[in-house]
Image (cartoon, rainbow, N blue to C red; front, side):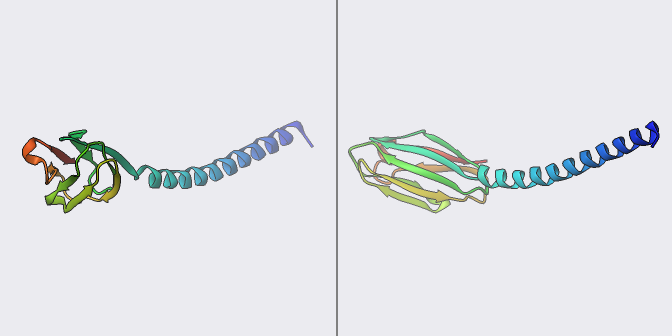
Length: 129
């Protein structure tokens, strides 16, 4: 065999290896991307209900994404997390927590209140972006 032919075979072999490797990595990367999208769609927000305010007072939730809210009553009174226009109304006893999931379908700013203490200023906002 001549040196040119050996060199040509080596080059062809190297190209086949590169293409095979790239092809399998492309498939792997694609399936990895799908997995990552599923994981990043999970949103969790912790909200403290205190006597008589929410912390944070303004909560931003992504539109069309299921969002878990962990409501922790850090006060001495029973409180609610109520957003009437989103159909959300959760009661939380003092010292307890409740987990709810919301999946808003329309952007906007919505009024958040505690039904028992809104007159004392326990209000906030939920922004759907």
